Length: 218
Ligand SMILES: [Fe+2]
Ligand SMILES: [Fe+2]
Image (tube, rainbow, N blue to C red):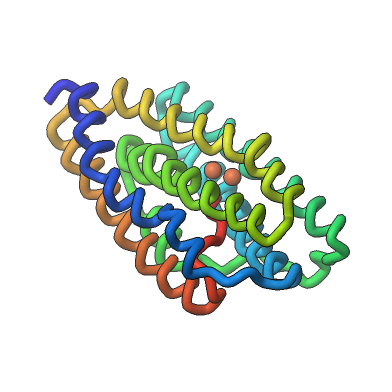
């Protein structure tokens, strides 16, 4: 299949699940929480940002094409900047990160780390995970507004979200360029489906624990 048509099809096939995961109707099920509840959600964001920065950095030397290398390097830097912005926000709220430790590898990152080909990595990472991040962050920033934290909402709206969207678009362009063979397209489809399935499972479990489905991605 022509790679542009393939990417169109891939995006269309996953739109329903992405919409479900980033459904702002979840806001209706989330009760406004005290400020320390929001801080817990910001710590989830920190864990996600550092995990995805590390993943992109780890993938960089495993790919040969310069455009994929640079895209991963750029993403790693952006995710690190998101971490710093969120860390500063928490400091402003009086919350210290003295006890923060990078999270252990969860089921999603274990799967992502197992991917072998550049096209699978781009399909699962920038194309899918960043689309998911954009969706769930959008629900989260609305949640922040609902509970009166305009500053955090602005941080997401003005600084973090434009980057997440850019990462997804980078992934899209790279897939259009590199996902040309039948084998690459088959692997990419599989990687996208599995990434969304595992992310959905983990987010459902985390939502139970956190008491809200409106928590950020990466
Ligand atoms: Fe991201
Ligand atoms: Fe991020």
